[in-house]
Image 1 (cartoon, one colour):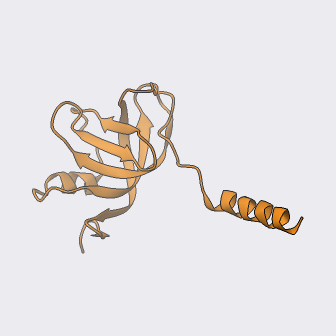
Image 2: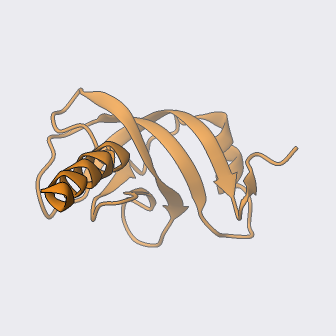
Image 3: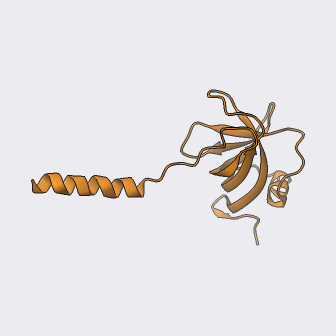
Length: 121
């Protein structure tokens, strides 16, 4: 009986520690924060955010020039690498499983680049 009670308590504590991963907004026009890795790739929809903890990738439209200043300065850095942080995105189209979703990037928070704060001070 004691082992069962301890197992139940451990399970409940584990549920409290494991937080759900915030997913990109599901419907066009919805907005929300996602934690991810921003990088620039080759091909179409070159500016992409991988939502950490998922298999989801969201992309900025290639012609979207209205982006946060920190992202603009990162894109001018020729050293490459990825930018990690929290990204406030608004869906441009509905989420479709198996497809990259296009979003607008409105704000960023807690950005790091190669383990240090971004932009560097």
